Length: 107
Image (cartoon, rainbow, N blue to C red):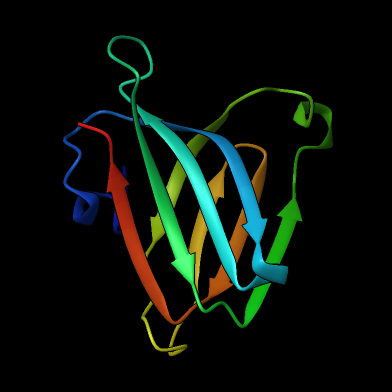
């Protein structure tokens, strides 16, 4: 997978996004994912905190009822509101300007 996906240190397999949660009036965004969806389905969460700007674009409205989206691209951007993180899937793209980022793995 291109972009910054390798920085997550999950390995070489793909991931699916299962949920996106916006809390604290948009100040925190949690992107719930599963790694290795055809075998172990290992969960992890991308947590963006101190968010200042969230942009959401749906580019496949026929797929919006799907329960999972294929993670196609991931750019981590830069903390301290310097550069937006961009998460691209087969259904939508999410851009987040954030203060800090945490990867929560349930291993």
